[in-house]
Amino acid sequence: METENLDETRQTLIQLREEISKVVVGSAQTITGIMVCLLTGGHVLLEGVPGTGKTLLVRSLAKAINADSKRVQFTPDLMPGDITGSSIYNSQNSHFEFREGPVFTDLLLADEINRTPPKTQAALLEAMSDRSVTADGNTYHLSPLFTVLATQNPVEQDGTYDLPEAQLDRFMMKLKVDYASAQEESLIVRSHLDGFTPDDLNQVGIQASTTPEKIFAARKAIQKVEVSDSIINYAVEIARATRNHPAVELGVSPRGQIALLQTARAWAWLKGQNYVTPDEIKQMAKSTLSHRIILRPESSLEGTNSNQVIETVLSSVPLPL
Image (cartoon, rainbow, N blue to C red; front, top):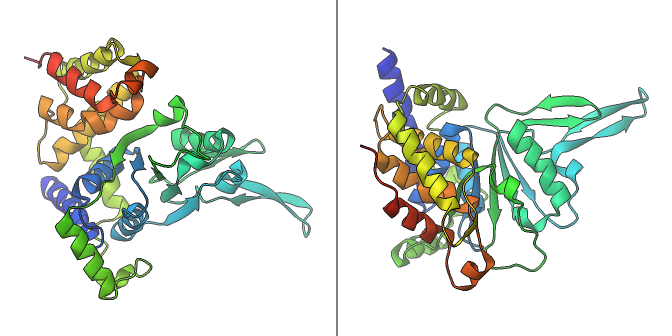
């Protein structure tokens, strides 16, 4: 009976991708990456130019899992209290009362996260890492499902603040949101001309295919997926090899090793496997590790990128026996 329930849970999560695809066209890999992060309790950094459906993707996800969601447009004048909440004086009882900020939700869309100053980014970092907010000596716990889906524009650099390495390391995966194919773009344009509006997701018939409870059940099931010592050593060697790469100034940290194994484990479970193979490690490596690598300035000027470093590392590290 337990196996049947797990199979049903896995099927509902697979159905989740199909539900979101009713609205978001041409982002199958991105949707899968977000699903993996949900199953590992990790946060997601979405990078793409404006107009590629990043906001619509998050709104569709919230509806498809029947979860609460909030959106914050990050701007240079955004203060920490605007995100976490702040104490407001109540004149009726002469006491300060904590007013919850938008982080008190299941899914938080942090739009253009690199447009806000480091002080505000640091406030979000605490919420991401501890899943709690500290104010006036009191600790307020966030939703068990709390997940940050942050977006950033890779083209516009004016008025932006680079995310610090510590915060980048808190994102489980960095996913590229690229343009759809020509055929898919034609479908997108046609749907809008036929009356589709992003503000009304009900008109496309998107259904809640799963629930937060089923996501929590899946997380427990994923813990039972076997990860052998040889696979652990393989992931560790990949991370260590990035630190010794001549183009790299700062390689993958131990947190990155853990993230790689966690995402590989979740992907194996989604595919119906009860063990992790080197294939899952390779498939998750770029999305999980690329943003954790800091290149040397001269390497960046020469056109080297972190994905190329990972490709080189994967080809050089021997497969486990």
